[in-house]
Length: 593
Image (cartoon, rainbow, N blue to C red; front, side):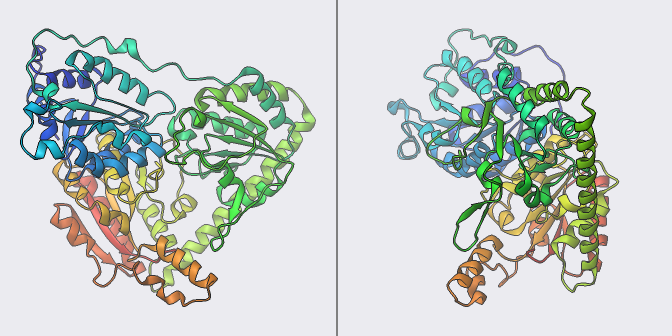
């Protein structure tokens, strides 16, 4: 990583791109990830020369999808955006999958781009013509929160400040700003001051309607079998303790959907893997930042796609989220339309504490309801402890298998890192990490890609580990093989910038999600399930991920196949990352499930 330059007096911008860098510095943006391209050569020069490659510092990537994924992972750790830059229309098309992932995940990223020149008299033959779009933002407009292409240099400060504010206002999401090559490269003809950006901060968080909150409190306090479902609530770490307080007050089980860390796995009210039975009995359900509530209340046939409700017809539904504040029609991320008894539009970081206060007020000193809540809490705790004990026993039983299972992979990795201040930045070994590890702290698990697009993981791991570097926290990921094959050159970026993390390959040698679908279709049609591996298996030839990592400058080992060999390999990886402060990859051949 680059080091800060010695303190010097502030430079005066000479070119339009210098002003863009001044704006980045005004917002204290630490990093700019990009694959270099001629259309933003002005900004590139300004970052490394005018800005001294410090706030922002260049993170050199080999693909625009990686650049945006790096910014995605960074934002999930820090809660603030970094810069990703995409080379005109071709780079933006490469970046589009990662931008879509970040949009669905509601993560703030400032995606910048270059184009033109829009003045056709200044275009180079061929390349400037075929790489200039009208209007370039159309490429991603349906899955960014806002886009802009400032017309003059005087428009640049307002455009950048507005973009930052929009991206960081709930519901957060990426924005895209495109800069004409002329605007970047022409000399300034007059002084252009960057405003005091503190006066353009995002608005205060939105509180729920007071009467609706009071009604919700009454419904929850009077419920016989309340349940809470949380999905992206944990994006704001301070909301996690507020949710714990509410759940304990009500003795309400919590189902964590896993888009972020929302609730400790060790808490007796954690009911994530016992949800079905509780949903069947629930009389009041509180949904907090749940994007797909219909999906949370139903079960779906893998063969016919038919959905059926798990819940009883009389259940009352309360929802608090900002989902309705950002809806586009191109991608149906608004999900199925679910009937609600009490919908509220609010930021859960302010709504949940107030709802807790109102519930406490409604409960008062009622001894009868207190006894009922205590009995419910004890029953839920007993079931929670029983599930955890069974999962541990099931995982330990896998030690004698010939092949490494996902349960054994999670168990052994958890044992190796348990004394570290770890953060699981990507992957979960098909849910076994959550079942076996002690998830106790906000942001200890960052969730998935949002848009479920392959290629997210490697870049996001780098971005998250970059944000964690120097904090004393240990970044670990469980990386799927198909995802890695999409953006494997990200490993070079990790080596180049000396970003420490332990990456454990869950290498099932298959695009198993597709193979599983193939199996279900074959069963339904009474056809040979053995053929589901055609077009999905990645084993002839097998990919040597350790050699792949080494070719990019990342140390690694594998493939590990024997369950007894797994822990020593993971321990070597842990030791290497801690001592060298560099990335390390362990390739593990593991069962799909």
